[in-house]
Length: 147
Image (cartoon, rainbow, N blue to C red; front, side, top):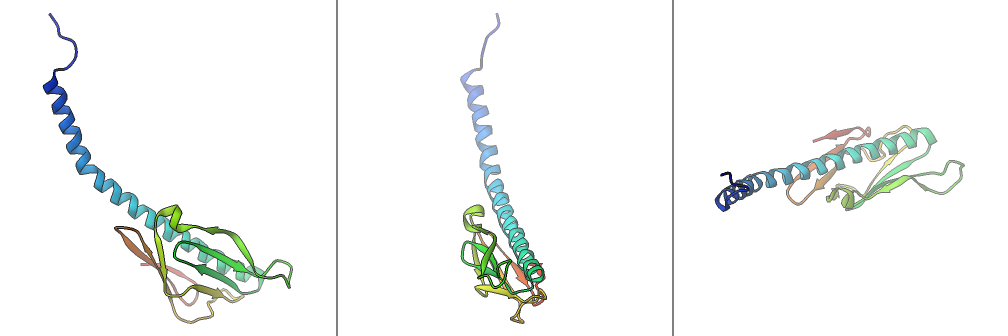
């Protein structure tokens, strides 16, 4: 009367269709995730720049945004002067969080108590992932411009 289950041919056709869909979709999904990781790291860098500027203005002393190949952090004077330089917030390990490398035109950006950089030239930070690359430019006034 009735048969139960699927034939081997039907199962094979479904398997081939699933394979074709996966072969088309997986690379696009991977590229999208990689672009999103680069965008997220750029947003984190912009947040750290704002933190450095805000700290310099709030504390009335120089604050430094430190940049290495895989991390970003802010240092400034202590809250009760004459305290030594302390880390503000936590050191963000951008490389391990987002699987990217950072390349900067300078190792650090120093903001004076007015929130303006001491070196009057823009700083460019390149965010590099295995298949995608983007950059962030920080101008002399400490404003972040995403490129």
